[in-house]
Image (cartoon, rainbow, N blue to C red; front, top):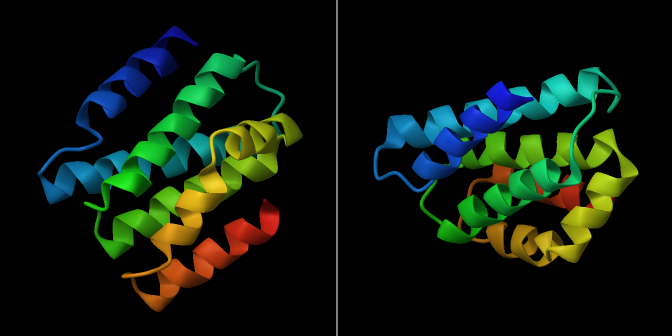
Length: 124
């Protein structure tokens, strides 16, 4: 768990980087960690504060409007995967107003982004 927290700290620190490649790496990390958690079907012990930090990171990235479509798709897929993993994760997303942010993300992006946003909105 300590390693995950350390990596998450680095990810949070670089989430709003002006470097396109770093933003893509952040998006890829988020997709990988959510996929790993989902593959374990939520059985890995994850502190609620860690999930909340992830949700806040998704929120920060989506609100920043600084990510390219490819990276946004990865972030959205990570968010959707996280929501599907555990009902309590969905509750955290709702409490943080993720639905409103995902709705706002639909405009100004590619059709692929809009489609993923629609899928997430169905989950919420």
